[in-house]
Length: 239
Ligand code: DC
Image 1 (cartoon, rainbow, N blue to C red):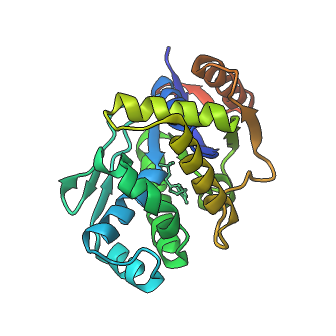
Image 2: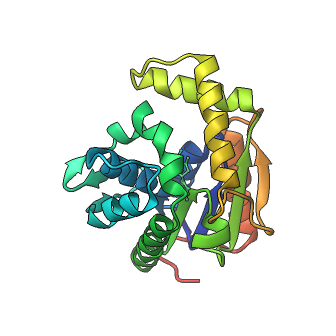
């Protein structure tokens, strides 16, 4: 019988550590939901850019965030991101949004708004499917501090830049290793030093260095951890 995840897996870490692939694979394997909170910060950044506000002006960014109508999907295999009804799943991954997202994600009122939305989505998916894998930077510390399994993925800067470069190239975006390394470093510095909800591992997070582990290796370790913590049931059976 197929296995089913119960509860929340909180998956945090810097960009390029394999969070998205690992989180999607894990959610898919366990029939669980999946939430990409980075996509939400990216979509709000796009909303601010589309309304031509200065992303370094917190009040203007907050107003744009409040006016935006944001929809994100929770199926692990179908990345859905709608902004005011527009499919923006590809556009939010581009360099324009990527270079401004840390400034927008540092605005406390934007974080309040999105953390509230994220908690409501998690509650809904838990009621519908029983389990969810949530990825971001502050999931274990702020969004879901009671999650029974918290993971903080890391990898060397070179490996992270190489992964980002491969993603950019696959998506048809022009990029080179030096620029991507600089961009990854800059974003991680901004994300981990902001005053509100900085990226950091929760005190009870399991830290995994993915530099030399394939995705399969990371997923296997996480499946084992979820089982050890009693989070895996047979599908259709209520523990
Ligand atoms: O995971 P990502 O690269 O798509 O995230 C984009 C940005 O959003 C990242 O630079 C920091 C921010 N972010 C955040 O501050 N908190 C989260 N929970 C998720 C993302």
